[in-house]
Image (cartoon, rainbow, N blue to C red; front, side, top):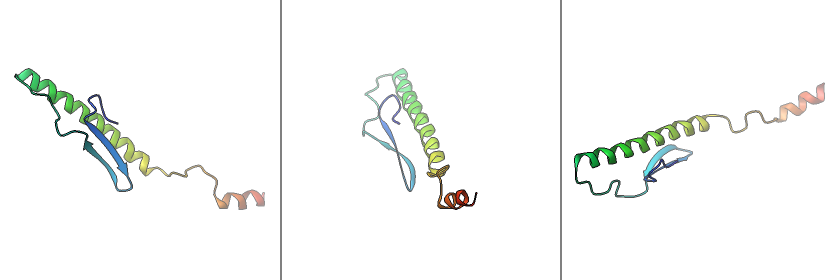
Length: 81
């Protein structure tokens, strides 16, 4: 998940999730207050999107990867019936 600007990237692994920047320059050169406010608001929106993605990945990582799959005990139970 990168948001609309493609400035941030959410990375996840066995140690958790984190946000990385794809670039050192996060805004263009701003010449007035409105440009600054607009650029910063876009970055905030992207970070909010990254936050939602991070929370989704944390929930995904907490779920069992094998939930619902048959186990070795299922074979024993089937044989007894």
